[in-house]
Length: 471
Ligand code: SF4
Image (cartoon, rainbow, N blue to C red; front, side, top):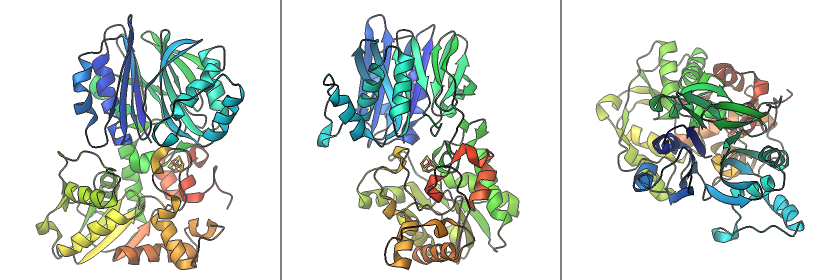
């Protein structure tokens, strides 16, 4: 998916930009980048963070950086920030999202015969460069950003570091968050509000969908008001948002606790204790345990110092070993026990299968699993979240393939929590994972637990609908 951070201050703010960006490390796996602006121009560094923490790659760079404003990014894919020289003046740009119509937009740009793009490895075009091209087609930054927002299919939030300040723009439907924070003499803007507390910023407000602002040390100037339609990514609260972050004023950990409580309210399973699959299952499990009145325990503890990243590397065999290294089982807590595990979601189920095998290996009597969201059966067309994963790799889609012998044209019935097909899908996954019992959260319960109206949330990866489905 990716995350970004920017700060502008009356005094040097390189440290804020460095740490503020670092607080987005859970959102991306490939590249980290920083750019700062001072009287001498831009200073920029980009590093591969595939196997190394952002901090260790950049700590030698920040001593070379000085500036009153800057932006940083953790990216799943392309090199960023890009430094652009245009008729609008020089600027640095970072983006978060996915451009589904990139080839079409490139063709349209080529027709003007004044455009070219640098090639990345494998002959691909850097999507952030395309966004800059769309911005440069207009007479002002705000019109250029509006041009990009109106032409991009998918989603794209961005920060532009300019001499006038930092332009911040949230994607048209507000799928990815952007939150403004302020402290004495400085303003910051972040994908994750968890970047603020330890840097002494107070959250001021979320940008609305499609809203454009110009941020300076003196405050926030609105350049384009928000649009009416909001589709914030519901998965942020359930799975990949950071527990200390809030979006639309709703804290992630709080929402996860409510998700767990909702799961427990529909459950009468007997168990010895409740546990979460670390990290994002933990908040759900705490909520479940509190509602059910059952002890919460940690039959696994994490060991993370040498492998801080969660999705890497690409090779599945090595990834399995990394996942295993990060969770150390405690036999004394597992042996002879009936355990209720809460998990944020079941994506492919590969790592979960290994975890379950190991828990049985350590003597568990029963393993129950509750997923905090419904079965994932559609890919995400809006964020880079599942870039390396085809929708057909999802555990839900593999189950459907097994049940039907081929992928059916319509998946509607499988998405319906009261249908027989849905029950068959869940049973197929339960058997494959060798669980004593498996239940998924209902979509309506998940939406209630988040606390926004369903019309304000994107739930496409569970329903396949771009707005609340007609039932
Ligand atoms: S499809 Fe899923 S992951 Fe993608 S934006 Fe919508 S809810 Fe989020």
